[in-house]
Length: 271
Image (cartoon, rainbow, N blue to C red):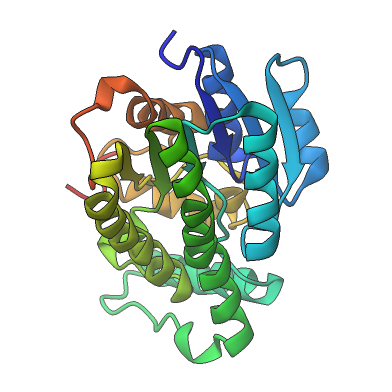
């Protein structure tokens, strides 16, 4: 088993990619601390699994992040793997509905054979609060968890950090601006941290998934999801387990010569 004897902390583990990664890690022999803001989802994630605990955690709360990581070290004496999977696509219900309506307008225009798509009209409607919340969870939260993990991993003799970004950070596709902006920030953070932490034996890499069957994607109208699917050559959404396989590779010793890298399982959307 590829993570036998390792201690791993996974954020965003109540659903989607984080849940798939936590379960995969347990199957590969790791002791897992699963965290999320959704306690019920966490309970569902860990049901029936051995060697796994849960902690309710909003990653945008740096004080709570420090508490959870300190408790992890007290309970397990080490931390070998961190997966930063917590993230949000839209910072509010209104933002999600605006995005859905914009995608439907584009689809309707395409059906009518119009050459020029209508404006997305997203940027000017983003509030200060929405932008701040998106960055707070997706970028600040990743930083807070990375910062808390580093001294523990240093005392443990090294480790692997896997940050979940998005193909949106690579393509510039229209969406609430804070999503690709914050996810691109995660890639910069990954590279900078990898350079600084290499001499401590800590590797830092990123995964930038394409469309994946998660609650984030499923919040979109069905026609909008179909549009997203048809943009990629493989013409389907990924299963969370497929993304978890990439995360597992980066977390394990199989990727021992990888650091500062981004792997993007995206069905060919970005090549």
